Image 1 (cartoon, rainbow, N blue to C red):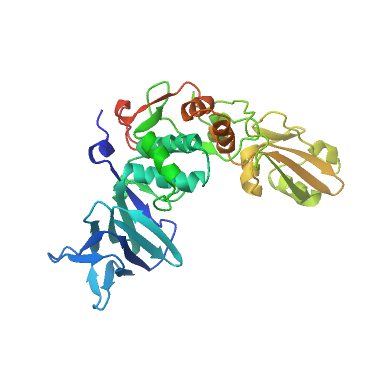
Image 2 (image 1 turned 90 degrees about the vertical axis):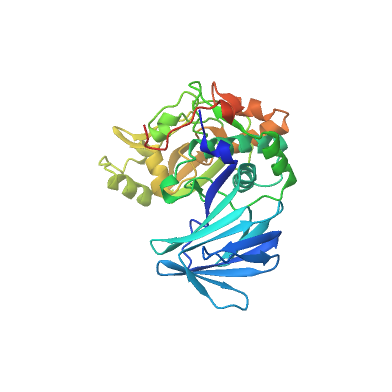
Length: 371
């Protein structure tokens, strides 16, 4: 069925969505751009030239070099060659982008919308989410995951006049990647996505390290998925985030438990010990239980995969993994790639019963909340 992005090969991303700054500096890095204030008088901008964009109530104030500021409702800056590149700086953060930029005010907030090619966006996400200097098969894995997410949630912000934002509410995107291996990984998997057994784009969940065992989706998000099951992962157990430890005073821990409804005798500390040899859903002390995901959130722990022991006046959390544990384990996938597994084998290891295919073979998903 028809998928909007297929018709244009482009995606609209809100930039600096986690920032609340009153102004931004646009600069042409390569190519030629044209500034259109919708006044029938577009202005050419060459490499090295800058534009200062400042919010003013429900309007924008646009200032180019040696010219007075112009008040407008919105502006559009479009590239005019095949090699156009610009930077956008907000506060002290400067990032680089390809494609076009649309700016407008909404609820006294300046929105910066980048329209760019899909594979350029995918490479940028891989760079932000996957990190540098990894094996190309790992980068291909992340590229297929990023592309799957983009198409599945392509209409996530459609009412806001763009497709996705650039922070973790959607996918991290810090601009274009200049890593040739990442760019190659995106191009060599061009158009490929992951479908579930029902031929619908999957929820391509991933995390840093599972600690040797992934979590089924229902343990974390209550809703099960046939491709997000518990698997034993031997690949990540020697990686950087495989193990962690946290110490807390016994008084602090018992105070937390009492706050959460625990009313047994906290003087018998041995009752508070807790062990996880395989992933469990809840912490138990006698008849008292508490979801592990709540403990992780409340105490800002690295994962829910931990055991707990009382030693004197201290409580020792001995943990495994980093993240929610559902879906692909990034550090495990990195090791698999180094051991010679290709991206399709890696994806099929972590997502049960899925199909890797071209986006043209995927039915169009309705917007979130749609029918």
